[in-house]
Image: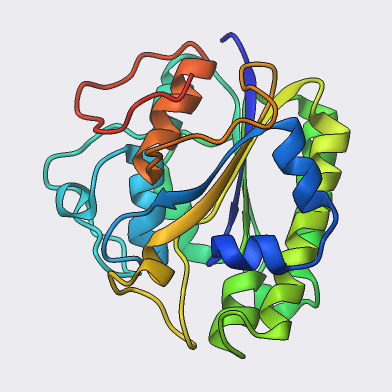
Length: 257
């Protein structure tokens, strides 16, 4: 494998929320990496379908999960974790919402660390601590860090673009900063959202729900470059290319490197 990769998903983060959260590291991210502020997710813009598309590079119509209840694939498409595992790579998940474990098939993860977001204050920070400890000790090939408080405690509990929502984005960016500062020399770091949101909901085809930000930090990406026509389907092919993995013919996205 050519490169090691960390993928961070900040649930429900809208581009305007990202830009308006008040965290000074937002501007730094756009200087040190390539970015897209108008990337598109899939419909329905719901957490599990979007993440299935993120990891399998096909639309919900093809992978079959169209709600937050996982549905086994009728015509299975290999996902990113299966490609990594098949190549002998070490893959770990750290997540604050239990259905995320369904993104990988049994046997493809070396660690799956779940912490219920509502059981702890700042559970995203705790997950980040645990991920950083694991990375320091094991140096895995791929780590997925899923931060859910932005969506659960910000968007759904109070409302998208509320002060509370923006605060949770800022705290999530603090965790991103910690990951990049600790691991940026060894890992390429990708930051994305799964969907946006409006009022206290998401799942529609409104631009507020369908438009997401993405950041790409690593030597393969041009600092300060705005990327065009980016889709959530592009993440798995991009990571596969970075890691020198074969891209399944069923995948619909394109590599951004």
